[in-house]
Image 1 (cartoon, rainbow, N blue to C red):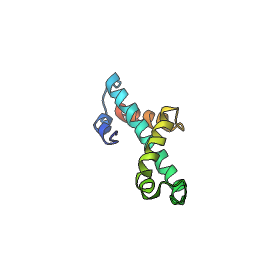
Image 2: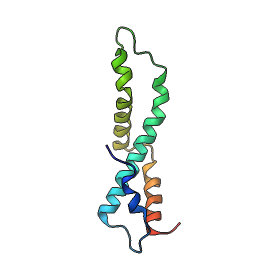
Image 3: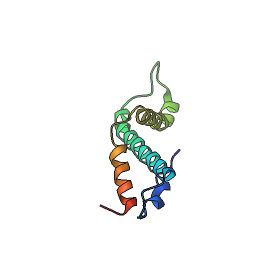
Image 4: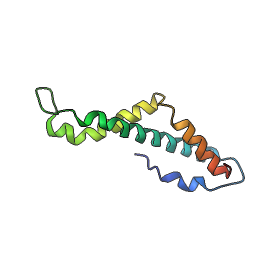
Amino acid sequence: MTDLTVSADLLRPTAAAPSVPNRDKIQETAKAFEATFISQMLKPMFDGLSTDGLFGGGQAEATWRSFMLDEMAKTTVASGGIGLSGPVMSEMLKMQEGRR
């Protein structure tokens, strides 16, 4: 699981362009942000579904649904996402470079 707060120290202004490891970390954080956003957008779609019935998962399905949504979101991001991580990464890089 990626912690979205990890790269907060990477956002301090610096004179030089970000190093490759920092850029990779920023990209990872931007993708984690997009996955979290997608997961939160998917959540209301599943709130009204009943887990009872012949093929329902019962209480276990309701309990583990948030994990399923997180994995669906991560898979969506890995497949190209919805285009949110690119602009987020650009803004993070601008903040790191100290310009607006």
